[in-house]
Length: 220
Image (cartoon, rainbow, N blue to C red; front, top):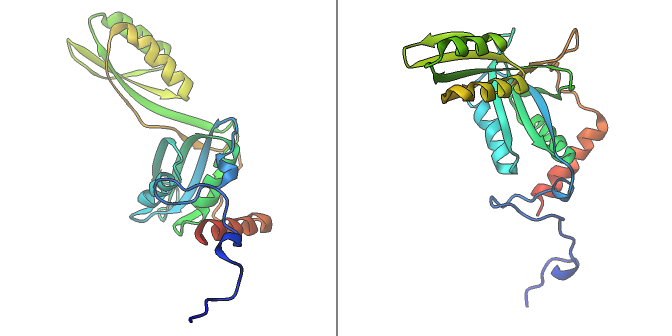
């Protein structure tokens, strides 16, 4: 008779807590616990190379985090790009987003921005132009710029915070909005505060937590 490995019977062996999602990845119970969601902006400094955006969006998809908006573009350093992500999640979920992003090889630094960070979005709003004088007046109200016009339509460019963009869209709706295109939020920290430093150093307690989480998530 073949003897198995020494140890407790299967029923007595410890098993990781938490359920699995549709992809078979175990969800941290703390993340799934009931917490009030909040909207926040996370800035990631990454190596400017092909596939980085796919890696980041794939991470959000696998972990079932919802991206409200995501923008990416070059920085003052041609070797680096900045990814700005707007999410609305409970605090444990936001913490996990930051920790999981730091595990990606192309990611140099990750930071949740302060509420007073400079946040801007651009929107192109195409409206009916049957009342051109009134359309122009609303555009001026929101510091908008007419970038295209015809006898039937006018397209207005509006730049500002999300609340300003949404207020402008709501006001333009009186004329009949035909199409809208929005860039999503991009952001920088204020003053001399660095938005994301070029450093991968992490506090010891955070690194230990990540090691523990990785073990829990993968060793099951």
